[in-house]
Amino acid sequence: MAAKREKPKDIVSKLRQVEVLQGQGVTLVEAVRQIGVTQQTFYRWRKLYGGMQRSQLARLREIEKENQRLRRAVSNLSLDELIPTEAARGNFLTFASPQVH
Figure 1 (cartoon, rainbow, N blue to C red):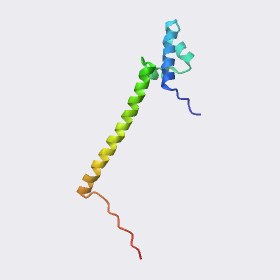
Figure 2: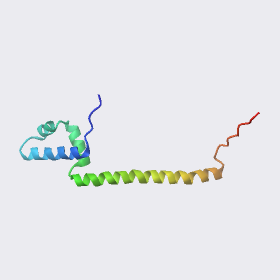
Figure 3: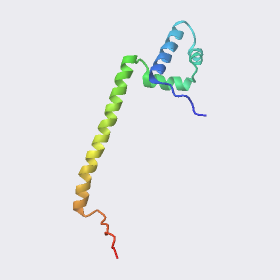
Figure 4: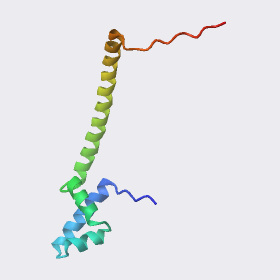
């Protein structure tokens, strides 16, 4: 059975909940248990999303989408430049047209 993936806004809320519980005197281990994740998951989330606000998450998502779009654009441009240079060197396959009898 596949594990449930939390959405970033839910992760930030849970991290904030742990902070509140710790402020009330609850131990970290108990606070992490109350939000329903393992300590390892908590530390991973804190490393990725620690200190973020919800508005910052929206901006992060926008930046990630833009980064992905730019990577595709660079990849396509690199390929467009590579094809003519390889063809000029003679590094291409020629396909014989099928002979019709």
